[in-house]
Amino acid sequence: MIRDKNRREIVLRPVRPNVGARAAYRKKLLALIDAMQASYERFLIAAYRNNEPEMAQDALPSTELKRALAKLTKRWNKQFDQAAEDLAAYFAKSAASRSDAQLKSILRKGGFSVKFKMTHAMRDVMNATIAENVSLIKSVPAEFQTQIEGLVMRGVTAGRDLQVISEGLQKQLGVAKRRAEFIARDQTNKMTASFTRVRQIELGITEAIWLHSHGGRTPRVSHVKNSGHRYDVDKGWYDPTVKQYIWPGILPNCRCVSRPIVKGFS
Image (cartoon, rainbow, N blue to C red):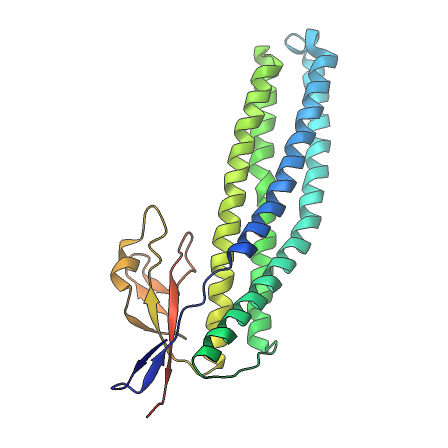
């Protein structure tokens, strides 16, 4: 906390994304992906062993394999669809609760006592956040399944062995896991930023100081330059790179945060 006597204001510490929440989100997604990959691998090993002599010569096994793959894809899409609703709702509510608790602690240390309620604005952001995360979670198996089908069909026509199929599965597993890790990290940042901004506005906080995290490998130059500068909490800051008003933590891979400014002190 910084007290500026000349400006008659207090600059509070930033609310940061919760590492535990991000790790839990990541763990849940990775568990789903591991189960899906293991299911595809068991299926393909069984299918190739049952039809291995004919697969490189006859069109019929490939047709049957494609049908079976379609059924497996449908089953896993259904499982991700069902899991997405629960996961998204759980982690959105968890992020809101954790950001509220952190902001309350920061305010208390600054000499303020507040009690947060689920307001219309928070509920609106919560619903939008859940919808976005449902969509992202459902997208995780899409690329995996498309690449696996292509890999399997190429394996059939070229007469490739199980080792090639297994290596291809592992490669696509890595792609899916990297996407899951990105979703967990990025959405935790975004959820925390969105909920914190709503609470700041509800508390009558109109200005905040942009703070660059210096945590990414390739920091946005415009965000580094804006670090330490004030911006309008409601309107946001105009980022010349993306040519729109934004808030800390909203853009993909943005880890920036804000220091709220509480005004009106003598």
